[in-house]
Length: 239
Image 1 (spheres, one colour):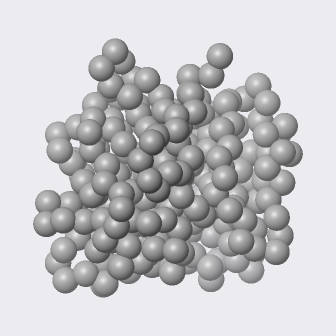
Image 2 (tube, rainbow, N blue to C red; image 1 turned 180 degrees about the vertical axis):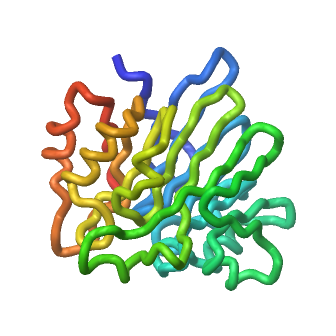
C-alpha cells in the first residue's frame, strides 16, 4: 500500500492533493495547481512554489507562510500571484534575478545558501541550470537560478528542482526523501535524464512536474516503467 492517499477537500476552489502521514499528529499535504506551481502544507504552515495567477485562484487560498520562487521566467515568477498570497508576515524566498522584482521584501538565495524558517523548516538553495549543448541559454548557470531542498523538523527532505537538467550539484545530493523533477523538453529534462537523476539520488518518492504546454509531449508512462522497482512514482495532472 502506498504511503500516500488521495485527499479531496470540501472548500472551493478544489485542486488535486496528496497527503503523507508523518506521525500521529502531523501530516504533509501537497496541492497541485499546474505546470510548476504547487503548494505544501506542513505544521499548519502553507508553502507555495512558483505561484502564477493563471494556474490557480490564489486570492481564495490560504495565505502563504512561505513563497519559494525558483527563477524569473513568466511561468514561475508572477508578482501579482505573490501579492494575492502574502501578508506582511509571509516569507518570500527567491533567486537573485527574481529578487529584482521586490524592494527588500524577499530573502535572496543563491546556490549553496541555507536558511531556517519558523524553527521547523530548513531551506537550502541548489543550483539549477541547463547542461545540454544548445540548451544552456534557457537557464544559464551564471544566472544562479535555484532549486530548493526543504528539510522538515522530522528530518524529511523534499527536493524541488526548479528548471534544470542533471547537474553536478544535483547528482551529488544525498538523503532525498521526495523529489520534484521537471520533465519538459526541450527546456528541462528528458525522460532519460529524469530516470538518470532518480537512479542516482534515489528518492523514496518521485513526482514528475513542470511537463506539458509544449509540442514535445512527455512520455509519463515510459517514465513510470523505467523507474519501476527504483522508487515510487506519483503522477498528478500538471498540464
